[in-house]
Length: 131
Image 1: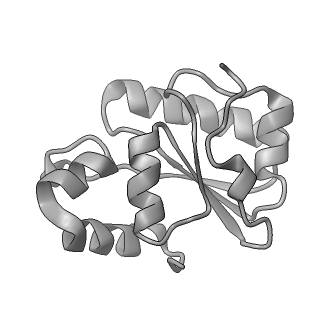
Image 2: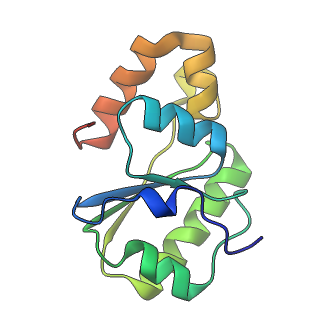
Image 3: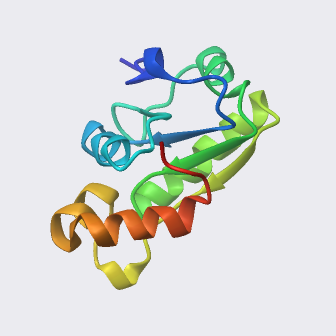
């Protein structure tokens, strides 16, 4: 449903950041790469209510939105950034995989380029420690 947010029950609210992604498969790659403060939505075009977005983001200084780098994903991430900005003072950062990798999401990056390339990209891009 619209208000389903995967992994919300396991979020560490003492951490200074949260990562929002659009699918369970992307969440699994991020979690297994050490970025456990990650939640996922059922799809890119369906956002939780303002109340849930507020509850999800109000404790964090930094919110990463990590959707696909195709036109639908970019549009959805911009829409979500605006919705979060309406309910939170957190800095919102949009994360996209560079076109040189020829994949649209982090799960495909892991599948086609392997764990080492994936982890290096995440380390260089997110600027937060994995756990």
